[in-house]
Amino acid sequence: MTVLCTVVFLLLTLNLIGGNETSSAPSPPPHAPQAAPTAPVAPVAPVAPSGHATGKYLPRAKPVRLLIPKISVDAPFTDLSIGPKGELEAPPANNTNLVGWHAKGASPGEKGTAIIAGHVDTATAPAVFAELSELKKGDVFHVRRADGRQASFVVYDAETFDKDRFPDGRVYGDTDDAQVRLITCAGDYDRSARDYTANLVVFARLT
Image (cartoon, rainbow, N blue to C red):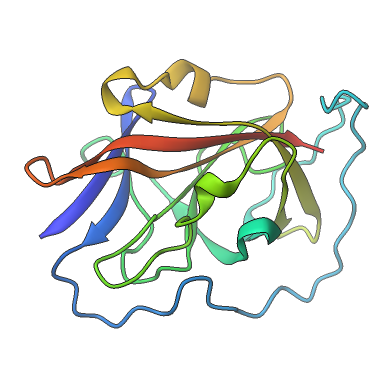
């Protein structure tokens, strides 16, 4: 029996797997270290002192690695696409140290809202976003990109939303600067629905 964590994704549904009660595949330990790209890292465009981007954004490029120093996240990316039922597919459940991004949306550092999703746990171990709730306003994380650049983001908000009151416009709406949403499961686990009751969303912008 697979546990699913769902989030409304505009007119679609974003499914984040919160755990797998019958998985027998061995899982790597949370935050398992993996080799980082060897390409030189180029700086991103500066931002205004207020924290808002100046209008110089990065071109589109696939994200390669997510680095969140505060909670020891060092995770590779996988592309997430829309499935046959109109749902954004979740990262593979057998890899606890993996994040996914909505590959048809904005890339991290590009103008717009980039969506990054990760598991909070599995049946056997915490997963990559197990400590995402520790992020607070002012915390910084980084995305290494396939073009050799590293885009850094500063958190400006973090909130937990009940499923029946999820503000999809606020979370997924387009922005006039480069922003990221980090999303995972939250709240209680409802065994009858096989789902978590809420979602945690971390809001951040390019810095």
